[in-house]
Image 1 (cartoon, one colour):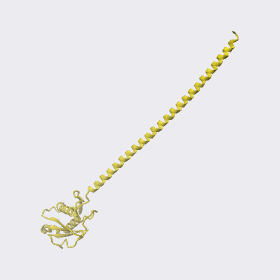
Image 2 (cartoon, one colour):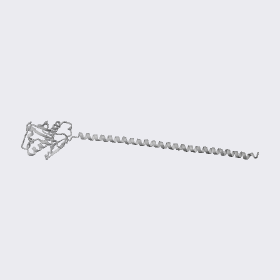
Image 3 (cartoon, rainbow, N blue to C red):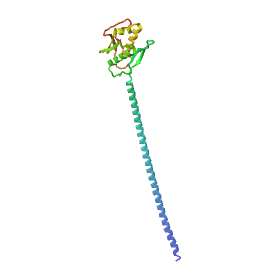
Image 4 (tube, rainbow, N blue to C red):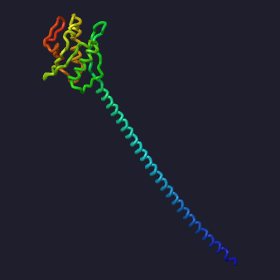
Length: 219
């Protein structure tokens, strides 16, 4: 009975050693599996972060493109508005005088559309000149025609009424200047007449002491 004890102890040691080895192997396998699991999780996390960053970059690009598109639209609208504003501004003027010094002054005309034909705008300018400068309902200016050479024929109606504006060197010169400057519109850069011929009550080559309508007034 005494001799069997060492054998049992040895067998127990072998069994314990075998279990320890198996446990150690199992532990190593578990550690390896956990490391692999953690590596997989880390890889998945990195991939998710990369995808998220890529999505954010694409979102930023889309936002930038949208903002750029809005800026371009706003610039286009501003340019369009500027063009419309320029087109809506009339460059026509009437020429009148300062009552105190008889100095010629320019008055902008906002009511004329440049798309109107030249004869119409000439007539409107003539009417405004009568109203703003001469202020005399007894006289009129009639735009007769515009010929093939782009020369406009202008008729001053009611010679008797006009005669007082032809008198005196200052008065005659002033009348001629406001008529020719207003009708020729030399500062206007659009399509216009190249000259005017002035009649008085339908008569050509009229000449007075201080004013002459013999020659064509070139622009």
